[in-house]
Image (cartoon, rainbow, N blue to C red; front, side, top):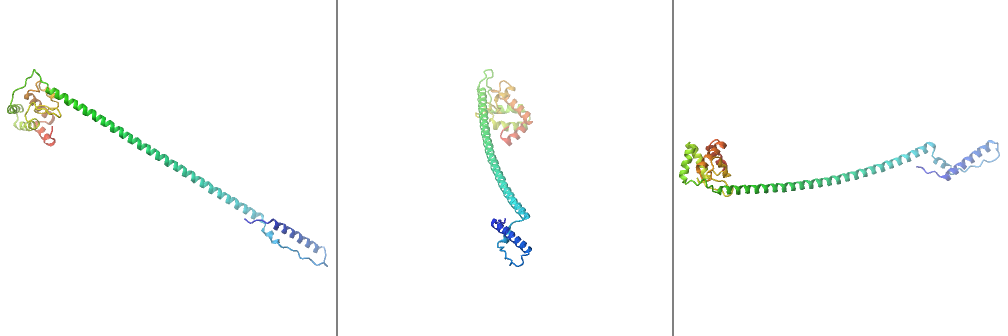
Length: 246
C-alpha cells in the first residue's frame, strides 16, 4: 500500500491555491506587471494521494490479506485439532487392544485351569473305579468255589462252546494274548479280569454268578461279547490285530 505524505498534501494544496491566484491576477488585467513564477516544488506529491478507486482497491487488498491470514490460522487450528483427535483415538485403541489381550489371556488361563481340574477329577474317578473293580474281583464268593481245571481242559471247554473250529481259532488267538488261558488273570493297571479280560470283570455276571471262578461262564460271556460287538470271534480278532485291544 502507498503511504500518503501529509506534508505533500499540504504543499500540493498551497501550490494549487497559488496557481489559482496567479490565473485570477492575469485575468484582472495586470498586464504591466511581471508574472511571478509559482514554485510548485512538491506539487507532484499530489499524485501520490490515492484516488477513490485506488483507496477502495487498497482496502480490498487489506481485507483479502486479513481473510487469507484468518483462513490460514483456522486451517492450522483445524489440523491441530484433528491431529489431537487422531492421537487420542490411537491411544484409546491401544488401551482397548491391551485390555482385550489381557482378557483373552485371563480366559485362556482360566480354561486351562478348569481343564486341568476336570482331568484330575476324571483320573481320580477312574482310579477309584479300578480299585473298586479289583476289590470286587479279588473277593471270593463262598457259594461258587473255584473250578479245578487245567489250561488244556479250558481250551477244550472253549472249543465245545464256540463250536466252529475257525471261530474257535480266532477266539483262542485273542484269549492267548489277553490272559494266556488263565481264568483268574487280573490286569493290575486296569483291573480287567478273566480269560477274555472283561473290564470290569463284574460284566461277566450277566453270564453267571460264578464268573470269578468258572471258566465256562467267562467263555460264554466272551463269545457273546465278540458276536455282539464284532459279529464273530474272527471279526474281533481282525480288530485286535489292528489295535491290540478289542
